[in-house]
Image (cartoon, rainbow, N blue to C red; front, side, top):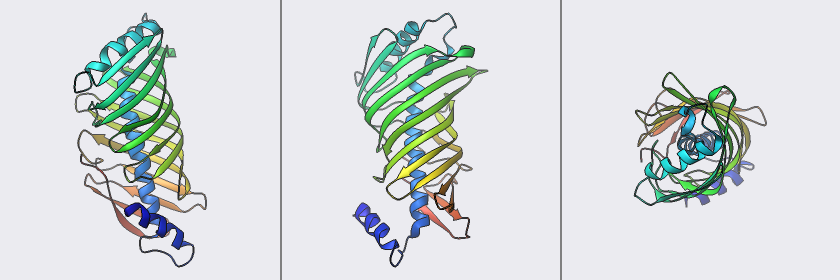
Length: 261
């Protein structure tokens, strides 16, 4: 019913407008995009965790380390199966729960490992229809993971698709940086990408979007959507299950978030 109402609302806007308005739709799209990216980031954290391996480690050794480690990081036992061939590992996940708030993860990921310049790890990750946290992600990402002074980061170039918890289809192309806090299992996303949805195409700028296990986005994070017609909607998180949005034209409102699971 909710999805049907969204479709009818979008159709009616061109004629008489709708109670929610385009701004609220845009704010929801912004949050959907962030949710899909946080799922992708959590999976990226696990698949690229070999950044601390010594420089002498070959791509095949990096793949071996990951193939041995990941099945032990997901529960219940046996839900994650890794198959290695050279520097390529195929991960098959079935209803797994894992770090960084990953819940009900199912799907197949293929990761190709190489050594990045400067001591990091380069991983090309692909996967179609990977389900997690009520979202579905088609992953096509290149990740450069580094670790220094106990801080782990990943520079991600993304060109993929996804469906958020509300059922909105999303395409994304761009780059972002993920900072991982392994002690608290939190991820923070900062970056810029082009987002396409059923309602609009927009430039999306994410700043300080932080998600921890079982919580809503932390206070202080923002997402700014700039549509093709240059209208701007900024979504601001305060740590609760409701985010505030405001437009460049002075309108404002709130959006209920799909979080806290």
